Image (cartoon, rainbow, N blue to C red; front, side):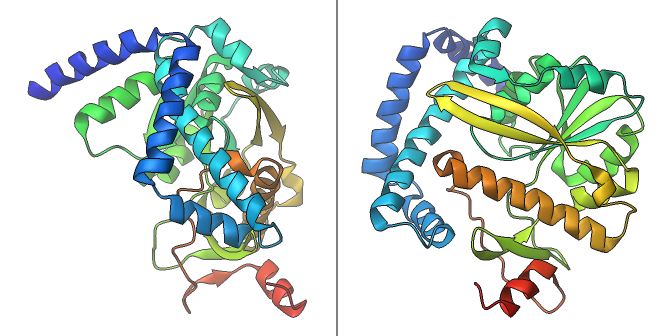
Length: 312
């Protein structure tokens, strides 16, 4: 009962604040940047170390410029998340432009589900919302539930505003296997660190040996599901583009462990290319490189090749 009252109170306050114009919200984001970057120092060291290892060829000045630009972007994401609560469809369409909207007509004609592989890049919340709005079929997003019940309800209400549905990450693969037999879109954001389990898959990513999610690749190939890679670009503050690129699965079929690894590496290379083009809009405050390979883990053929070539 108390949580319910608290939810409605907080939601009402945030809803009213969301009605403030973008100019005010971006002023709030500037204040938040000053506090996080210059006063609190929120994960500054972690983000700096991640950048330094990922771009060994960049100068110290370049690393610091990206570092600062990233924190500006991070604070803008916070403002844009709350502003989303009251944004109209027209405003979304102006600020998150789909470069190839015809892809949704193509998906609607299919008799089974498709997968979309995205990243924590640009405004990934708006990207998900735009996909929900543009599609005529049910969209499912994979997410990790929040521990606080009030925060969880607030996040769900915003994320499901345009009809999209969420699947808990814990059971995402099992649920997706069944749902792909229906007409739907299932979105995976696969660029963060997998949980340490009995066996992990490691590949070469941003100049480092990196544990990566690979279960999505097994799902794609087991179901031979049509799959799209989601490209995001930040044009300027509060304005993005999104493009859906179909992945040609004939290069990876039939299903095998080796082909799933090839598809995982293909996705990772796509993510790396996008990050290198706009490094300041990826999520550098994540503890991306906390796992090291163990004897039971699987190493990508890329790592063996790089080692043989004398690279990092």
